[in-house]
Length: 369
Image (cartoon, rainbow, N blue to C red; front, side, top):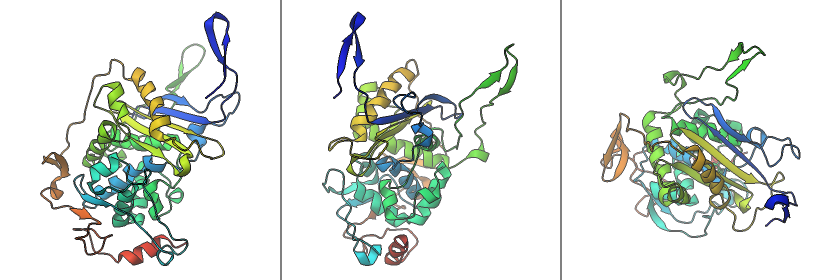
């Protein structure tokens, strides 16, 4: 709540400045051109550009990049993962015992990978990262432009415990939006002199295999998963309010609600919103990315997508639709990872159809300083 005062001509003015800060950036995923950039509440008050300069924990908005890595290891949207408690004792972590929780404190048992991402289940993400291998995931996220040293190869990476900027997130989500290509953001189209002569001009990049970050089918399946988030998951308000199906994204809330995110896209525009205090502290007990940042994103998209036809991507080569789900060709008909962390598995952390590995040794290695 803020205090306001009625001004002349029936206008209203804020009489107190908010302590909380925010950032918003939107770009065209097809060429990287920046369409909107808000670095904070008031440039006169604070010249720090939160879009480009604020390194914050992304929370659950980082999970899609872990899922993307998993697709390359045989996981499918239909893989059944156990949303059950996990506990790592000091012998495994090499330090303090760790017992991660879901945001709502509830465990719902067996669910598909698709549902796990839509409901942002932490136990599902941790089990997936455990199976993929934190080092493999750390290598994979570099394809999206993230700095490996800001995302140590520990299981906490599954919960977005690293550091990103809103600009990095917009660039990374654009890889999913444009079919797997890495585009660099740019702000200035051209510079002219006083007579109108063009001194320099930015040429939009050509999206070809030289700038490919991930396979087209990986981007396509991830789009399908992120569409579920905006249809029935933590960001269902997006499709409900904007009344269109071509919306994709992920909410993010960090520990103790210190950072609230929403990162998402429509095929013609990627946008990221963030809310938090400059000196990290709780935004409030019930504050989330879906409650704080998603409404900002929706408000922007309401204007940005006016007159833009609904457009969904065409399936690329190498994917197949079977039983109501998308698969890589080679992982259809139960050929991929069927389950993870179920009682039938000999090791709760093991997976089927993945190269065998000593899980305990790998976890020990993950937590070494």
